[in-house]
Length: 130
Image (tube, rainbow, N blue to C red; front, side, top):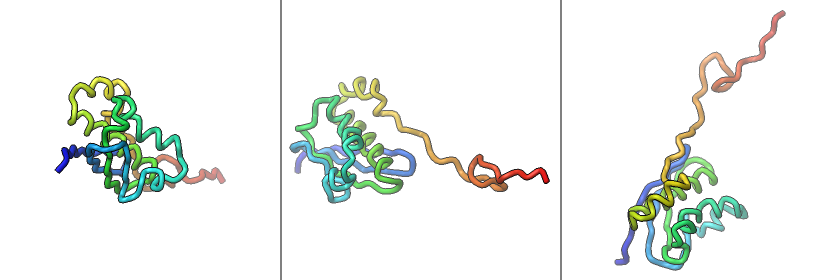
């Protein structure tokens, strides 16, 4: 069995379980290729490849991902986080490069809960003086 490095990435309500396997630089998400999974979104695709590009590993690893929750872009953020964490597991020297780019930090921003007596989290109902 080839060396397999696993890590978990998260963003908003998305969770991505990432497996790095020696390969040719292909990324599979939930059984589909990355391009098929996200559609025609080159900016989002670049976002996912960023940790591999920074550490010069685009051609060395195949990435297999199981992503659940949230939307496509949030899942791609979770995948990026997972890939970065897996790369650090594979080689501790990558930590500084990825840390400086902010790829190891979990993005903590989530939607604020709706409060009672309000329309949304902060929006009020329309005020009528008369």
